[in-house]
Length: 373
Image (cartoon, rainbow, N blue to C red; front, side, top):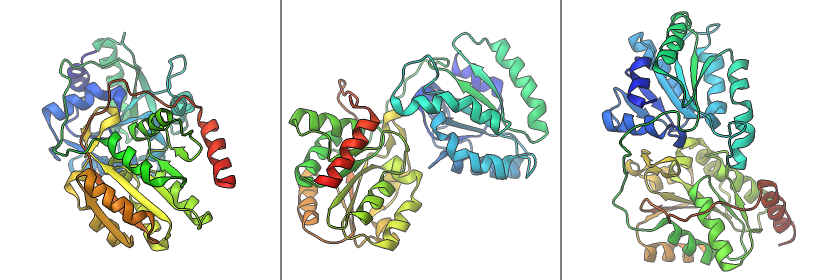
């Protein structure tokens, strides 16, 4: 189905959410038509943030908003869906549009398999009526579903459209760019040159994929690295937990801007506890690149100032590899909570692969390394 028809049938004029590759046609359409005009379209930090923003929109206008997300974001909406939107609380109607990663019977990455299996069950448990949009769904069927949903929305109930792979199409495929020059994979190479035998925690998406392939190329093994292939936004907290229990080890976290923004409160907790052995590196390309390149707000922010305000003892931004190397050399031998922002270009190798080890293999090897390394 063409995304223009999908949007027309939903009949909403305010969208907020977190980009998803399965929803790339919708995301591109919204960016093409609205950009980031906050009156019609806001790319949020996380899905719960979107649900609350949607609630505010309804309170101010009386109209029904749309919240879009990958199904991995269902966990982030459970609290606002249950304790804010629910008819037994405020009864605020929202249309959820959910990309179905890990759909049973459709091959996907390991972090999506369980989430895919429980996607519909979670909606049912939250008493959110849903309609499955497939490649075969006609406009007539979608209109009939929307007509049924309007009755529920009028009584303050939420509804959801679950979107199968390739169910939506858009003739345009937007290209996203920034003005930074550092290549992300090259930056990771420079970082790994300094980490040595220290443990590394990497965030969701291409950062972990590139780290894995660099280790493969160098035949270094993967025991030193914990690849956070799911659980977006939590890599820094994982690294913090390790740093607290392994005070004699320098712990490096290679984070992304979208992930850092998703659960930014973690930085306040990290800063308040000031682990002297944690180095938090955020590779900032101002984009959700792994799912298509839609923008984050990170390139509008002074991330080092935010880190310092949260309690990080040293925080700096670099925009060249020479600056990065200098900061890494200083950091390697310093004993202070450190934050390094790396302003990086968008883009990756066309042949970039994915980790070939299972998550449990990665966990076991990493725990062995922490115990024996």
